[in-house]
Length: 132
Image (tube, rainbow, N blue to C red):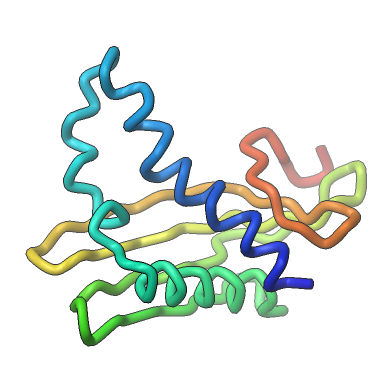
């Protein structure tokens, strides 16, 4: 279940890090995002990132951290759970911090909250709060 859920969540995570700024970039001059590490990632890098996100979401430790490194591309990163909580409507949520690095010293930090739906899929939810 976690693999299928992550296949849904990671594109959302990637969109929040890369695609959303690019789609708005023409009007808002987000040209600096062209050098975001995720834009340099290949399929293997994205797979390693996806595995780190899965490991972090699946880890019972509310402060879990999982690193990833691709020695072929020299790209790397970490996924850290900075909070785990349950909302008033009984959804399990995790606040994640993603640090990604591409070769040539390009780095980026993103933070987001993901909540687990009844079907087991994780979804980005920027409004979720503990006991909300």
